[in-house]
Image (cartoon, rainbow, N blue to C red; front, top):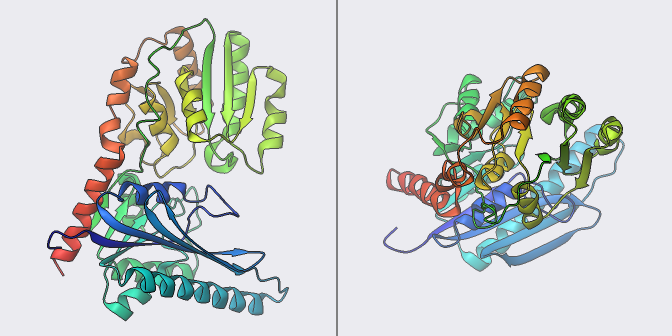
Length: 386
């Protein structure tokens, strides 16, 4: 691009907003990683109680969020029509404001295909601007099962066909998209970890207490937190010097807390900012992820960057990062394997590499600079082969 910075426009189906402040936070982190390499902007449209337009520079990313008024009609056909119209109108406002301030982009990055695919395809038709897809959605996996229905499949197929490249956060997600017939030029680029905050604690004091930690949005169907709790109760009965901290919040928190209450050693601490989360991970002996399906699991990477071993299922892209030197891989839903893995940690927490080596196994692959370099390579390949 003749030495000038690329103008990259993020069009996202998920993005943090005032209604759901953590929605697609990993997409925002991708954008922030590109700030030093690109002139980057991010647009997002979402439903709220009132209409609003918010324009800001967030960590170097020019960001426009347009909220459209929620549709409250009880007539299904009318409700669907009104939702679509308001959604499209909100996007038009966001795009108009962006073009007035920044001009036309060199390339669009569509983050999560549904429902924003039509926006990227509209920009391509209108201005002949190519787009790259970055997909994070677990819906393509049969264990999730949400990739279904004629309209969803038709829009997804059209969006992938018209994309110049597709980025997935794991090889497993790429393979699953190929299995459902979504052919394209695929690239694997990890989510970003803030490796300055998620770092090895130099002055860690070891005690007799063995601390396990789990972090998620407490979606039991995906993360199987109830399975972790059931197994930990057995662990705690066998090894009273153990405790489990569960970080995160969600609609299922109350019944999960009730499930774990009898042990007296399971602590639900709610949602934490990344600085607090890093401190919890750093002070723990092992991270536990018992997911039924995953695309990648950012928090597992954060735990490894903090130098603690992980116990995780062979789901999604997890096995691309976990090996016998930095953790233990087990089968999904296999509580006996989870019990054995947690027991192994209790009996010998020194069986893994040093914290520094555990961190080194992933940090160079997931830091912002490395991720930005990979995205720039994809963008340049697209623009140079048009």
